[in-house]
Structures are given as structure tokens and as C-alpha cells.
Amino acid sequence: MKKQICMALALSMVMTTGSAALVANAAEEKTTVVFWNSWTGGDGDTLEALVNKFNEESEDVYVDMTRTTSFSDMLQTSLPTGEAADLILLSTNEINRYGSYLRDMGDIWENTSLKEEDFSPAYMSMCYNDDTLYGIPFQISTYMMYYNKDLFEQAGVEKVPTTFDEWTAAAEAVSALSTDDNPIYGSGLFYCYNGQNQSVIQRFGTGYLIEGDEENGFKANLLENQAFADSMIWMKNLYDKGYNPQEQDIDSMMAAGQIGVMTNGGWLKGSLDASGVNYGVAMLPTVTGEDQKEYALADMASFMLTTSATDEEAAAAQKFIEWWMTGSGLAACETTNDVDYSNVTPNAEWSISMCYLNAYLPTSNSEEYQAVQILADLTPSETAQVQMFTAPGNLAYSDAASCQTDFVQDWLFNGPTDPTYDDVQEFFVNYQADLEDYISEYY
Image 1 (cartoon, rainbow, N blue to C red):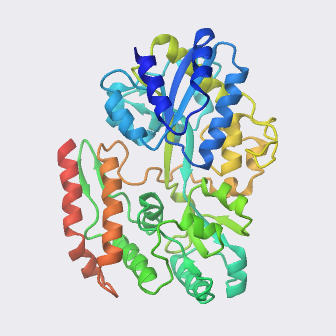
Image 2 (image 1 turned 30 degrees about the vertical axis):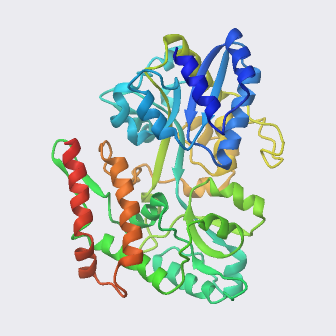
Image 3 (image 1 turned 30 degrees about the horizontal axis):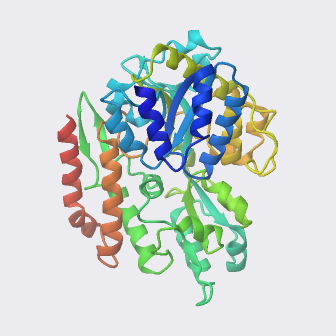
């Protein structure tokens, strides 16, 4: 029954792999693993190509993958009924929320050739809850700074910003290049993207939106927080001075050569490569220009097995995860921009082609990975802050992330001009209360 429902769901989605006939034929000969995720962008195209490669190579497992923007809704409705996908890609921060619907994956070390010691302890520890393993690291989505080399040269910006004052100075200089026919903005923050905005907010040294732990309690962290106030004032001034556009699709503007400097994840790299824009990548600034590696600013996604999977399906999914870490990548083709990745693993291809940091040590220590200067430069310290919105393990993670989206937009469009520290305290009282309400709902 579950497989019939999953197939119906898959066929209802625009982004699926294979046709219904292929799925049906594969299911007759192989164990079918139903796999859901939200990778609907350009990186998802690579994921789809790699899954297809696995299906061609595997003699006993077929992965039926659905990529969808409705991933979260599908999980919430199907997990309680036992009709969810067998395998999912989910933010590791959500383990506490969905833990009762996830299978213990501790037997993967016995069922496959993978070894726990081959994974970075700092990231691997995030996959555990009460000594139970619920995930295997898939990617570390670290935010980074992208900058347009040509615009910098035209504007006379000689130094890549390492502080936020330097970001502002570069933004002012690049914005001066703008014309009516070709609008150009020095800065490219976009208000509706919580991950991008939180990445720069944290680099001011703000800490988490919700701090603490279960033993000592959690508290909201917006008020009486000088670093947070400084970050909000900085962002507001960029918008008010016209250095930052008010559009939502900043990615396309960057690809069109209209943005001087911005922050985003590795998934932007493919679009910029295809556009031909002359860009560079660096670590995000900090207030002082120092301690840049102390902020990982990342959301780690992990492979997880749901309780909807049978023992046979779970074992088959583990074979796919093993292949992801140890198999071979794609040969040169349009999907890989004609780069041959057949001599590295799918896991390594994923990191190298899209600038995703990797938690699998055989990959991160490999010659191919280390040869990519961007990856080597972006690797954080072992003590770096990893999660973005709440202290590790807090159940209000998603609520805090949504709240951040709301308050940044509200502040940028409705906050006072030339704001002060006191203005920040007054404006964010209600949002502090919202975060406190989220905490009370869970604890």
C-alpha cells in the first residue's frame, strides 16, 4: 500500500526521475527505495543524474527519487501514517522534531563498508540524539561571499572585503557605476532569504537567535544584544542608501553582472559558471576581519531513514548511501559542464562541483578536494559555530528561521531611517516575544 501511495505522489510531482513504467519495471527486479528531497534547483539536476547512474549500475536496488518544493508538507502528512519515503534528505537540525519517525541507522557500520571514524566528529555528532544515530552527513551548506571581479576593478575596489566596513565601502563604490540603462548595486542581500541574512548577522558575533540548553533553559537573544543591533543597523543603511536592491531574485542579478558583493551558498556557483560572469569567492567578513573560520554558518543536510521503510528497504537505502560515499561520479557531460568526475566518488563530485564542504574525511582529505582552493579556504575551525538559528537541539529551529525572515523584511521596509541601538530595542520587542512563545511551545 505504501509503495502505491508513494508512486502516486511521485507521479503528481513535476520534478521526478524516470517514468512510471521504468519505476514499475525496476520494482519487479530490484528493491525499490523511495527517496524524497527538496533539491529542485541546479544542484538537484546533478543529484538526479547521479541517482540515475546508481540505478544503471546497481544490480539489486532501484532508487525512485522525487524532488519537490512540497517536501516539508509531504513529510508532515505522511510520516504519522507510515506512508512516507524510505530515504529522505533533511536538515540535521530537524532530528529532534522528527526523531520519532526516523530509524536508528547505527547498523550501517555493519551492513556496509562505511566506518564512523571516517566522518568528521564535529559534524557526525550532530546526527546523534541520545546515543542513537539518525543520519549520515550529505552536505554542509556553508554560506560564502561572492564578488564580481570586473565591477570591483571598474569601481577601483582593490581589496576583497574582510570587514563589514569594507563591504559598505565596496558597495558604495560599485553602486556609483549604476546607470538608468544598467542598474548596478554594490551589495546583494535579499530580505526574504533567512539563511543568507542570518549568515551575515552571525558574523557580527550575535550568537544564536535562541540560546541555552534543556538543562538550563532557552532564551531569545534579540534584545540587549549589541552585535545584533549593529547587524540590523548595517543592513538597514545599505538599503536606505540605495546600495542594495529591493528585488527578491538577487541570484539572477548577480549572474547578470549587476551585483558587486553578496552572500550565498555553493548552489549559486553553477548559475554563475553558466552565466560567464567573472566572479570570486571568499569567506564572509567579520566585524574585525579576524576569526573568520570560527563561523561555519552552515545547515548540514543528512541522509535519514524513516520508520516507513521496511528492513529490506532500509538495507537497500544503506547500499545507496555507501555508493554515494565510495562509488564513481559522472563522466564529462552537459550536466557536469564537461568536467570528468568519473575518477572521484559521487560524494566528492557533489562537493567539488558546487563548493559544498564535506564531512566525509576520505573526501575532504583527498587530493582532488584539497586542490579546490575555495573549499580549502572555506573549511572552518573545529570549534566553529555550525548551526545558524538556534542552539543545537532546540526544537524551535524552524520557527526561529521563519521569524527571522519576517523580522528582517519588516525592519528593512518599516524600520526608522538612520536607526540607533535604542530603535532596535524598541522595534524588536514583539519579535523577542514571538521567539519566547516558540520556546514555551516546546519546553
